[in-house]
Amino acid sequence: MLPASLDEAVAALAAMPTAVPVAGGTDLMAAVNSGLLRPAGLVGLGRISEIRGWQYADGHALLGAGLTHARMGRPDFAALIPALAAAARAAGPPQIRNAGTLGGNIASAAPTGDALPVLAALEASVVLTGPNGSREVPVSHLLTGMDPLRPGELLAFVRAPLLHAPQVFLKATARTGPGRAMASVALVLDPARRGVRCAVGAVAPMPLRPLEAEQWVASLIDWDGARTLDPRVCTAFGDYVAMACIPDPVGDPADPAGQDAGALPPAVAHLRRTVAALARRALGRALS
Ligand SMILES: Cc1cc2nc3c(=O)[nH]c(=O)nc-3n(C[C@H](O)[C@H](O)[C@H](O)COP(=O)(O)OP(=O)(O)OC[C@H]3O[C@@H](n4cnc5c(N)ncnc54)[C@H](O)[C@@H]3O)c2cc1C
Image 1 (cartoon, protein in one colour):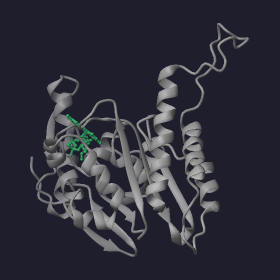
Image 2 (cartoon, protein in one colour):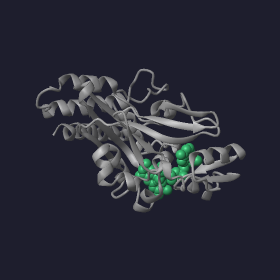
Image 3 (cartoon, helix red, strand yellow):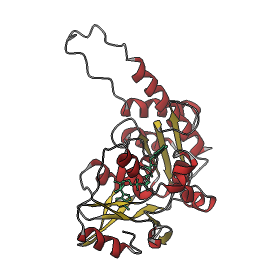
């Protein structure tokens, strides 16, 4: 079924509640092909033009869920929300970026979804539309399951603030070339609120916000002046973020006296170093 509007798509899902929406199909068809999913029917969202672009609304951009990574990576979009454009450019190989969508990235809610830390740092919200009308929820509530998609609902738009200030997305992969994130960091400056907001992706089921580290570093920035920081502060910020997001593993119950204390498992130590480096670089770039 290929509806031409959101209303038609919602009606199609209401008529066939066992059907599943499909946008670019990059995640969904992989699940079908591997036998993990056997949907009774599909409702294709690819012909719905109203969700393939964006519009402006009160200092925000209303981004259609059908925007592809390739479209978001283009310069006009990068001028609007640079970190989301950087995440889109980093999302997989070209064939994935040409088909995969913003809405699919959010609905899949994979820990490695590159758009997710950016949306968390932006404190974006999503507009969901379903048989009972539309409602808006913070992206973080959707991702934590506090306010999940309800049966028959579609993700229609993402409301993202236009901050007119530097923002950065950086990603580390386990291999060279395009790949899923081992860790990612999104960092945005919000001069109007004198805030630094940061989210770390891929290290937990959903993006993590190191709130104390954000507040600490924001308090050190001269928001009315040069907005520069001593490189040592950037390094300390990276360490603060990494410690907040990658806690020490829970101790071994078989070793209650903590004989192994202080010996961080190599994989955890490596991840912490990676996150620290990404956060340090992201802050340095945002302030440079
Ligand atoms: C080889 C490969 C590499 C990849 N690399 C990356 C990467 O580096 N970074 C990254 O972030 N992702 C990556 N992905 C994952 C994927 O491409 C993205 O998550 C993509 O954004 C999914 O979008 P889609 O439109 O293809 O979603 P689909 O596959 O169409 O749908 C995914 C899920 O979302 C639901 N859905 C889709 N749209 C809506 C909507 N509007 N409302 C409600 N539900 C909806 C579907 O029902 C389905 O459950 C990769 C995938 C592959 C196969």
